[in-house]
Length: 155
Image (cartoon, rainbow, N blue to C red; front, side):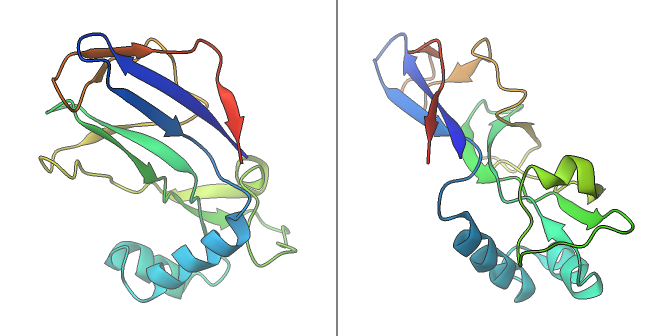
């Protein structure tokens, strides 16, 4: 389950919805993303990590990548790489996102780059998301503001 936030452009009225977290298809989506990673579709770094760490895990939660250079933003997968804590045995063939904080340690954060300009992006998760964040409208470059003050859950 995740949270959804809606923003609207103050100038042109364009509406964007951001869906953070995971959905009901998480087990299937996790395996699909792991398979993509193992064949190199997510880059050599993640591929090498998974080959060398059979018990490694990847956070596939949806996060917002907000470009610090051009102001564009997009939803991406977190892709942080984790190793289990000693004596932790994962019971399912996928880790639950709530297990990452207590049963895993961060091996390496994934270095996201802006797909528009190639520069560094700020990663915003549902935990550190604030309706005070400055978002630029993709249509007219004006500031967007939250349309609804309380987030809705999605699944």
